[in-house]
Amino acid sequence: MKNLNFILLFSFLIIAFSCNKDPKINDTPANPNYVTKTFSGIVVDENEVPLANVDVNIENNTTKTDQSGAFFLPNVTVPKDSFLIKFHADGYFRNVRSGVTESKHNICVRVGIITSVAILVYEVQHAVPEWMDAYDIYFVSSVFLVEYLLRLWVHTDLYKMVISASKRAHILEIEFSLRVPMIKAIKKTAKYMLTPAMIIDFLAILPAYRELRILRVFVLFRVFKLLRYTKSINQFVEVLQNKRFELLTLLFLLMFVMVTAGIAIYIFEEHLNPQINSLFDALYWALVTIATVGYGDISPVTHEGRVVSMIIIVTGIAMISFATSVIVSAFSEKLIQLKESRIIEQVNKSEEFLLICGYGQMTKMFMRQRESDDHDYVILEKDKDKYNQAIKDGYDAVKEDASRHDTLAKFNVEYSRITILCLLNSDIENIYISLNAKSVSHHIRVIARASNASMVQKFKRAGVDHVLLPNSVATMMMQTAIIEPHLYKAAHAILTGKDVAVFDEVRLYPEDALVGKRVKEISFKKMRLLLMAIEKAEDREFLFNTSSDTVLKSGDVLILMGYRIGLEYFKEFYHESVK
Image 1 (spheres, rainbow, N blue to C red):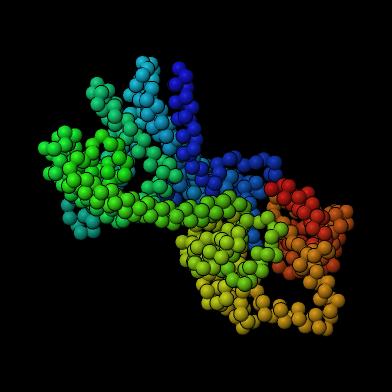
Image 2 (image 1 turned 30 degrees about the vertical axis):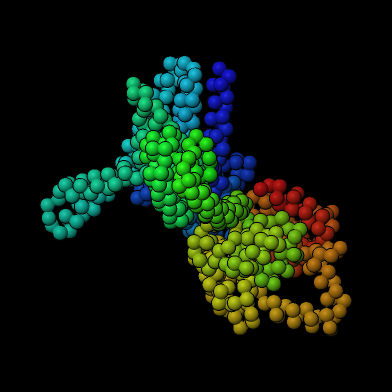
């Protein structure tokens, strides 16, 4: 009984470890605490046929809204068989796919795989209870059989072939026949059945026929089914597939050396060595010697055999070194990819993060200035040397080209507020990145560096939200330092945050407690803060010396000045505590 409990516990741990959750999808029902506004929506299928009407509270389900009226709905509960949800607000439409966090089917298959292997191990020295035997035969094998048949049916797409053949017959005005699509479907299914994954799935079903005890060994093939459902194992297999040519070359070399050495030792030792009675014994000895295992059960007794032994020992060491170098290099490359994937997965869990394109002098200065900032970020750098330098400096960097569409598509553009900072020295590259970002999602906020003022309009046409002019800013600060040195000293101290008050901005969102309040209702003086200006959401104009009766609205941006501790408390009390 103790052994059974241990096996079941071990199975549970493996299942828990192999579960991979997707942080992007959340089916949690809407939180009713902040019900202020409701929009209507409609759930449709893949053909845009309405399934159901739904009412969604935007205040609860949106993480942020912007001036375009865009909103995201990660917390909407919808029918699991629906494909698309269309919500409308002020004439704006947004598509969101429905889904679940973790496939229940995947968990069920993992449970079946681990428990069936555990039962096989348990029955070696114990009598298996009837309920356990019935569970393994009828439930687990039935699940695998149904899964196998469903995979064949889904892969075949017979209905698509029939529809295509029907349209073809209608256009060409010929007689429609099921023969052609059926033959295509059968060929496609047969080809799919011969793939390694489907062969493993088929062999995993065979243990249902327990009358033949030899078939019980096929339970072990169920372990290979984990390749479909465990991300870590898939990544390991992918590493080996990337070095398939090198490994196959090594395998053929191993077979050649083993066969050659085996035949040689068989010829030299067959009548003189009582331990070698067949060619199989000779091949077994050759493989053990090449692998440098050296069991010692077979040893050459002739001088010729010992010479062959010395040659293949040296050859074996060389082959093992070659294999080790191939696998280590493959894993080194994959570890870098896994680290980058982990960085992307981690940042995608955040509601707001920053993508910094390029790791040049400006990026280094920017990163040093933001050391106290806890916002998530990723540096995108395509140059290998600069990428390595960013990693060496301790920053989260990914070796990718930000001007490529698939690079930005890896990030959670649907549910996160993303700001892209283009700090490359080339204006052309910065414009390409800006165009690429806006093509992925026009909700992405782009801040780009321009070499001179004549490029500002070109950047604006590319969709850049804010254009930075480092040379102009440096010239302006230099002029201020010469003409008004005290003003420059104060501004420099504030902007760098050295032991004085600092500037900060607070953007208001629909769920914030500040929305709807008047300026005089907020305790700025109590927190040692000074309201410098308000950027209004309607026209994006700054209001300085704001009236105390001004009402704050969603989308407004407050420009505050004060000590850092006061700003942090203000955000915690009025702003971030309601998120």
